[in-house]
Length: 447
Image (cartoon, rainbow, N blue to C red; front, side):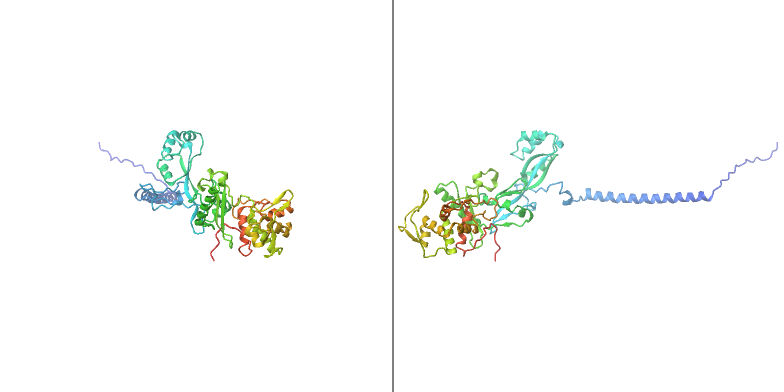
């Protein structure tokens, strides 16, 4: 059978493509290219960051800047095997200025210390922590500290004013929850020397007595050393002499003052008994008592200088005048000399001073008069606290009524009570040309 060839029919499909489809396809391809470029950029950026971090943290670690870690990590000194501070360590800067004498000898300075405290909520075993801290802080009460660390608090002080060596040792224990707070502690290298003048500071480093209190703001604001008028060499010599006199006469107290009569600078000021200035909190009230400015005493015969100067200044008496030394009766009291070693009923003015005659001084005071006497003493500063840079300066005791008896007794130094520095100030005016200087503990600038 002869047939014709078979032809398979092929299905032909025609797809219609519009212009919008072509534009959409081109837009998608463009977006794909952009995404690839952005992805490649981010990959390159992350690769650079990863390489930089690897170099900074693994290959060549970078030391963090002090300003970044200072608020969190205290600066701890390096200690050599012998226990001393390493030579390249600089002590932290303290805030309170030092105090020096007129020659630059240090009288008071602040030393860097640290306070160690804990957050009990971050501690694992309070008993173990207290035991480990005891190995560094030998004075630590271990049972009490363990009990305090076991409380549910966020802050517990462990010890104050620890040394840099102790700070480093505690830090090396690696105890979590233990922190340090920088601080400073006031130190007086010369101990007893000028202790009442120096005074003290409280736990917050604020002055509470002496020049530490009077110049508190100055010492906190200006870090330049505060230069006093004291000469510590003279101070030491005066202290020895005053101590010897106190022992000789078995006195309960004694004091001594050396002052420049021209400038008012106090070169030495000693009050005994005294105390170690580093142990202010353990000193007794008697030891803290500064007899030179706080103690009030009848000036006695030293006041006869004021009586004589007053008479001469007012023109009431003259150098050639004579005065009776015969006992003087007033009421039920009699004014007489302790010793009648002059054997004369009448004394010239120089002899009145030489023999320290009480009746003669009383006669001079009567000649001047009570009103002018009181005015003189007020002008000489005897009615007010002595103006010196010590907050402990006391107000003198002055009679309310200035009658005849007061005029006579004050003439030879009784009936009033003054601090010794006031007597020194008044006496200085009789030998420096009549100038009433202001006592000062600050060194004057050299001319």
